[in-house]
Amino acid sequence: MKRDWTRRRAPLALAVAVVVSVVAVVSATTTREGVALSIAIDLAIACVTTLSLPDLKSSHPVVSRAALTLLGLDVAIFITFFLNSSTNFNLATGAAMSIVLLGLSFLTGASGQISLGNGAFMGVGAFAMAIWSNHHATTPIFLTLLIAVGCGALVGLLLGLPATRLRGPYLAGMTLAFAVAFTFILSSFSSWTGGDSGLQLPTEASAPRWLDGFFHAGTSPLTTPRSTSPTLPSSSPASPSSSWPISSRVEPVERCASFRDNDVAAELVGISLPRARVVAFIVSSAYAALGGALLTLINNSVSPATYSFALSVTILSLIVIGGIGTISGAVIGGIIYAFSTNVISWITTQTGLNPQGNFASQLNGIIFGGLLILTMLFAPLGISGAVRHLWSRVRARTQG
Figure (cartoon, rainbow, N blue to C red):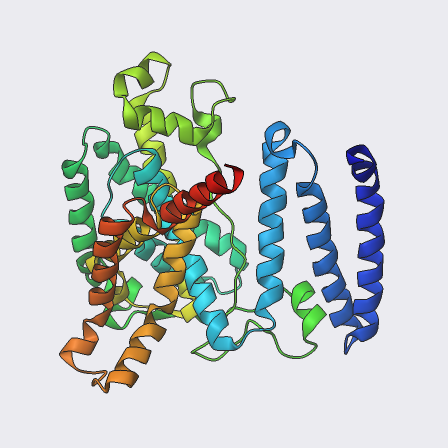
């Protein structure tokens, strides 16, 4: 029976895809929207069919992760066309922040290094994006993002080299100094950064023509008012796995975890600790720069006040709340950050607080501080860790 299902899986998926495509084209308002809808659904069906293959995760983990990532991206883009502009703005902000949190999660959770400067690394990417766009407005958006990521990685390299001799609170102190000094550095180059007022992008972000043409003939879904934003496609920096000195069969995260847990054991298996720490620092700063560049695209502007030391503290709090060392924890932290403004607005409306008052202006820090305390008390592994622990207990009871 299982063999029959395995053999019939592909023909059945193809038949469902054909039926869905026909229904989508017939029921859509325009042919373009019908084609776009059918492509999105067919892609999801193909990904689900691939993921349902037996032993795919163990035998071909790269294919499994690629299919899962493509499925998530397909569903995310598809859903945004049915949400209002305010929700899309929050989701785009959360996606950008999740990238930043993912980099910090890799640095702290996998390699064991503590950084309080990721807010400043975000600022490097954000201002690199804005400065380059103002001087080279015709540069493709993906190339501009790569330039911003490169600037963040370069700054991470410059800070990571002396960090190879620092551990624990000393490394945190060095990144803390960089985060505090970053706004003053921006002020010193006001002719480039625009001073306290910051910079505006010369044009708003717009969707690629091939994507925009499917859904809207005249207006772009990515050209939105100030209070709205698109869900922008993003690319992650290349994995550092090719630069490690040991066998490629060992995952990069496991290599980092080896020198996080035991320096001597890591050196015995051939890992260069200074090189590994610098690479982890570069990857984390590159992710932070990418998130900052995407936030600049989302808001269409950048200001030095946004990337103060308070943002670095918020980022560290979010990754602890979500769960250090996990992708799901970074996503949870990004969602909390994105919708925190809505929660504050709801609180001020329900309680009658003056939004411009001292207490209301500090609500953001109060909320994150309270969540951090509750997480430390009741979920030391973060929300994602608590959910995994609860799910394992439920499964154990069900199987028992």
